[in-house]
Image (cartoon, rainbow, N blue to C red; front, side, top):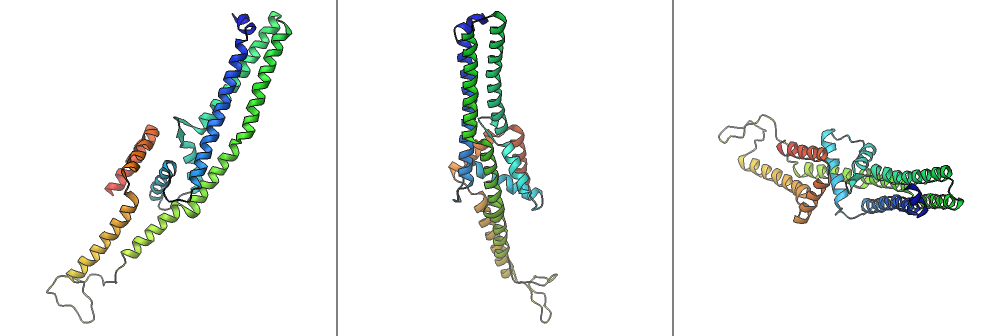
Length: 265
């Protein structure tokens, strides 16, 4: 049976097909890196699902760590956890390398069988040429896609976004706006605001109307900040559901737990 596989060229076709699948994995990874780099470098405020998910994770980590987030570590961890087609970048790279190894293992097995059974040099040369062609194509596409550079460039773009122009700055600006909106004239502590109590000379008492006005300003500021953070359209809700479906069960459980904790706080 093995002799028939070698003599009919089935082994050569199998080696080439497996090698091409490994090259296809490299192209898929390269395409995904390009999409994420384009999204990370986009200057528009309306980001796609990947950046929205990262911004949400960043806000949760910022609250859990008391405003101290190690951004490089956060970016690297996010890239390790990122999945597309149910696989991480690391798993895609291992799959590409594994397919190449399988192709070369088939070539080695074919050569060993040819030498032991004394098949003609023609079959040996065909196996060697096919193995060399698969190797050359794999190396060429590896140099062309340049996956290590794309990975480092994506990490640089994400770190720049969170350090200078992204969620970190927006988070600080939002806090500053809330603080400015809720700022009121200083009122002396422990001063009763009940009508009918005589106030001492030079002492300011907050009346009921002033207190209601101050509370109204505070509530409006909170509503404004909450609307900006949580208001989403129907399409955004659908994208958020899709993001949750793409995550693994542990990540879904962690995010749902964080949202409930934030809501109940």
